[in-house]
Image 1 (cartoon, rainbow, N blue to C red):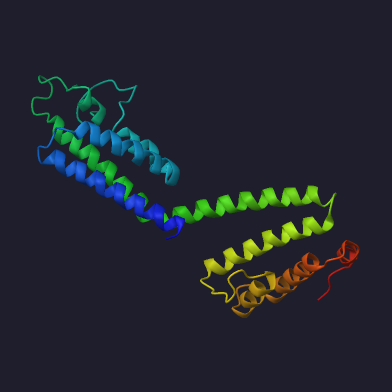
Image 2 (image 1 turned 90 degrees about the vertical axis):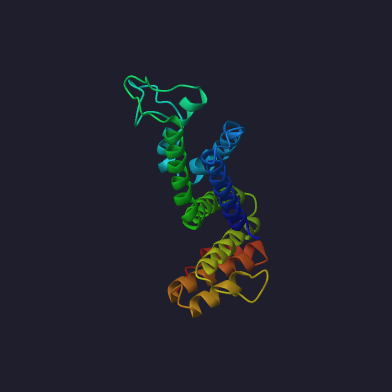
Length: 230
């Protein structure tokens, strides 16, 4: 099971556990509600924060008391109020049901979490691409420094970066590559044959692969000075 699949499985388990806590509360099982909810909320809020920060404020608003709140009643009562034993004035809100308000707030949180879970593939894919881009940038920076010491070593490092990038491109297009540990050439040709990259790009990648594969440093330097044609 891939890391992405493991995260999705954890999200599903977390959603189901939250739904279970809510159902128990609705069924008058109050004994461990605060403990179970707090345990769920601590995990769920981290998931929302990392995967859908645009929904974080709304998610928190159903639990946390607004420090700018001027009145307590419908629309301002939150789950934290229930845990503190706080309720609106009966004179102003004679029909106010604290449990019903908690159920509604918790249900709203679950619907937000469900929406995050439903778009997990896209969210995780974006995060993965951002992380990979950061890694690539770091490796390119290292290669630029390394070239002052060893052109060959810098070329080898950049070869790894190119291979990793081509593998990501192949995976994103569901392109299967025969070899378990493919080289640049093993990836470059299938990508061109599948029309995922064009001929000029294929030629440039071939040129970069030739640079990486050159053993003698002197020859590598000479090839680097040669203008790539066609």
